[in-house]
Image (cartoon, rainbow, N blue to C red; front, top):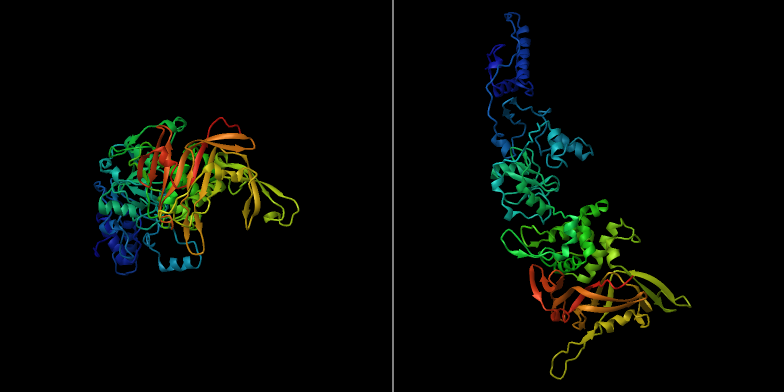
Length: 584
């Protein structure tokens, strides 16, 4: 090879030409014609430097026609995503010749940073390019590296039969299972794992080469690609997967939500769209019961079924809550339960870990926090603006603070304030301290009407911090939330009051300044556990309108319940819906 004369370089292959150029210390980038010309120029310069060299006519640089080569995959070192430092992968051969290589041949390998680039990054420079799976768009990443656009559309992909729908689960956080990156995340439709990118050296591309799984769906758009061949697959059979990834609903479907029947999952098991089990990761049963209750509020459910209703004020909490609402109401789901893992991640971030899925919480406090957080996000921080939350649950009470107490301690007259509310709180009488003659603890009972006298405008409530106050309901919302203060926290522990509140399932009479109103119960959150300590689990009773049947829901378990059992439970939160006879 070293004695090859000018004019015969064109008979060598590209790899042999690069080897010779590398031995001479010359650049190895470019097409075959450029490599031949570079060698011929180098030979001409050496011959002109020798006085006794015979002048030989230089043949023009030409490229002999080579038979079309079959398309081949990257070499083994490139397939594994690891190459020796300083080496450059061989170009892929196609029928039209070798594919062009990146402009900068001596640039560091993808995913690696050279020492100079690392120093520049540490100094605050912007010369270090993002990795292929860190760019927000794969098309931009491929174009930035001068990679040819080999994306094509086909409906006859031979790998469609490898898709395993039973392993697909889009409820968890959409992050790469290798790098934990949340950019350019693809789901392997064969094993269900998440990976980033689809270009060479990305995790999805490496997974396709090493494992042989070829079908990948981009999670933010639902587009399906076949790797490592890198072409888009457009087939009608993929619509059910896209609908599970991001369920959509028409106006007609939303209008008929309360009259739907049962559906079947992939295994043929029946489930109720809108009333499905929620997975308990560790101790998030307090949040599951609140979510089940809020999903009974029709305006809130219908609002979040259409993403365009809140796209202008999108926040992570709104996005995750909207996704959860749509997935729980999906009638074409692959399984009859949903995991709120992604939603609870956003809750932990928004509440600064006040509410977690690893520690038991109070459903009443979570209910109040979640409604206020959703309202503030929808109104972009303006509490005075209206939202679907305030339109559904907000009422108004008149609070009169007697002179000389609380906020009116420096006033000679009573202080009257109009205060909006999303939930009414009832106080239980103290639990008995002694046992009866049979040496058994008596569990007292009290009717809800006696507790509601707190808001009749006459009864005076004494509070050390707030003073002596009287409260009167001015307006009642369409959906009335009533909480029972069952857990008392002292200096040493949290104690549960076991008093039973007798409340009606239908026909709760409420009085306001605008007149009377009648409410029917639609959800009841209860606690089942020790009466001394807050131990046990939270359950919720749900009334399904399409069947007029009560169900007891505990995480993934759903069972029918008698109305007589519902009204005798140790309730902590009740949700009522007003009948249409009331005129606010």
